[in-house]
Image (tube, rainbow, N blue to C red):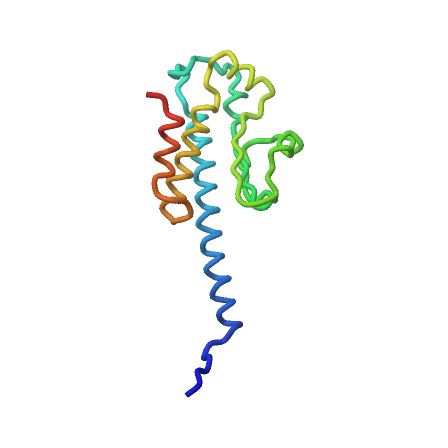
Length: 156
């Protein structure tokens, strides 16, 4: 008795494509949520933060904080509250896979950070850990990834 295949190749490919789309959407949502939380944390930090106190008198620095999500080098989401010249981040964009870029768009943000004040550094570390936790939940990265990052980023 010979075996005969009883499946439809086109239907199988559609099922695989649907599963890939579900995974893509879960990952995209994870990156977006990490970006949104990054902005909330960075903009909402207390004026007297443990990593340094700076007074944003004009609110320009805090309002310039935002994020971008790229997939295969194409922008798929950004924080619409910020206006930044895309050329400023072009050199950071990876042409493969998902990427989250968090920014403080004012040209003096790095100067403030270099003085020992926190603008976005601490929140960026937290965003990476939150993203790893989210990706663990959907089984994209191995369990314990976030815990390993937390040991690296968070001071005792």
